[in-house]
Length: 376
Image 1 (tube, rainbow, N blue to C red):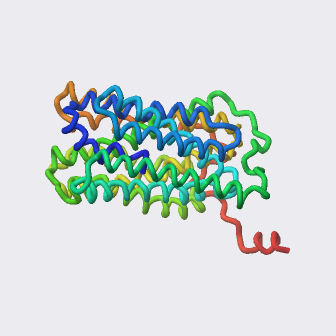
Image 2: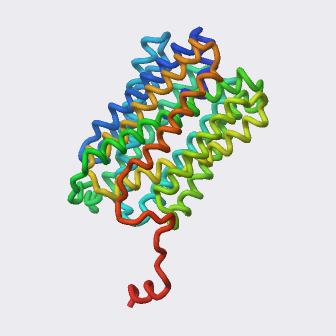
């Protein structure tokens, strides 16, 4: 919810602060630069990263509630983004270490709940902003982070203390070639930019070009994240039978085509259908990519840095999209930015060296006799 929050409130914010697209892009840039810094500086004990992230996000959204302009808003969003980067990186690495088998499937499940939060924020903004002020909404949102932080700290003290932190250790990390590190950085950079460009700008795009007022103008983002949420469940199942690299390529080819479709939509219904298909297409890329990384057993600092690069991509490409929109006088033209990101991702998926020999689309599925021998 914290990651996607800015997108649904941008129309209200741009009216209250009288911001053009270029300056809106600066707000997005500040938030996701903070996410990059947060993800790149996670502590060795990952639970401390989650706790610190929750407190930092609370402070950032609290400051944003009292911000009165672009500069103070950027500072507050940087702090909120820093906290979100700590939370997301620490959580994903922790999950990847606990589930060595079917890592992509496990990450798809955890990202299902991440996407569910993204769906809820669009619906909450549509329901609450007409009744409450943006200031009150942000204050309540900040308080929720404190409540969750206290809950995680109490659980650590009273429930998890005897179990130790074996899953948080580096578990004998393996050396990774520089080409592989660079390839993962490129993929996470462009994926972070692609997903964030769509989620942060789609509300304004819908309001300008399709005149759809379902859910107070939030219908496009709710549909996008609803389909992304459902897609994460399907991805969890698919990744038990199909290679992560194959799912990457299918996802990016279909996403590139659907971004073009979105850029040509002129009414609410076609846009909603395109957003639904786009969410399904995007859903499998991050879990499959991060699973490929964690299977190589990188140190926590390196994995956190690579994941944090997605925040850098989110910051850069969302800002670039706003810049292109301002100079071209059309947000529709600025859709070239997410389209280019999808094409780059497709190319990068072929650049990544395979983890093991063979390039078949489907991995070998153990036969019944294999299971019987293992059980025996």
